[in-house]
Image (cartoon, rainbow, N blue to C red):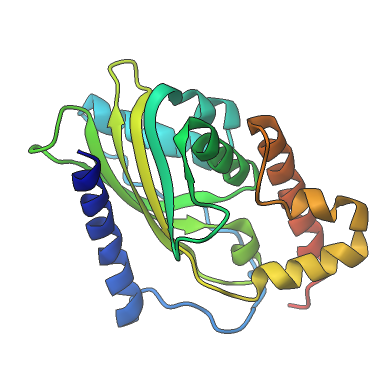
Length: 226
C-alpha cells in the first residue's frame, strides 16, 4: 500500500514538473516584488463524494490559516509522511508530529495550496483521494516567485480525519530565504531565530514560528523597492 501510494504521488507531481519544464509554469530568475497576493484557488464545484469533499475542506482549512483544524485532521496511529525533492531538507518528515508541525507552521505563515485539483481513484481503497496543487509560499510570493509544484495522496476516515497523508513538494533553491534572513538579522536579530526556524519541538512552537515569519515578511515587503 505504501509503495503504491508513493508511486501515485510521484506520478501526480510529475505532471506539474512537466508543465514547469515546458514553460507552462515558469520560475522567476530574479526577485521582483509582487504587487498583489493571489487568492487561494481550488476546484470545489460538484463535489458529491464525502472523501473528496473532506479533502477540499482540509485544503480550505490550511489556506485559511486555521492551524487547530489542520492539526485535528491527524490522528494517533495514522500513516503520515512529508517528502521533498531534494529529499535532504528540514521540511521532510515522518509521523503525526513531524507532518502536523510542518503543516501548522506553513499554514500559520500564510502559505497556501493554490490551484488544487483532487480526484478519487475508483481502483483504490474507499476514502482514497489524490490531489495536486501549487505550494504558494508567502516569502516567495512576496518577491514575485511562482508557487512550487506539490501533491498529496490521502485516505479519509468516516469522521473526516486522515488515516494516511503522503505529500511531496518540489523545492527549488533560490535567493528568497537568504535575502529575507539577511534583512531580518539586521532589523530584528532577537526574533531572527524564531521567524527563520525550520525545525520545531511542538506544534505550538511551529505555529509561533510561522506567525512570526509571516509578521516579519510583511514588514520586509514594505522595505522593498517596487
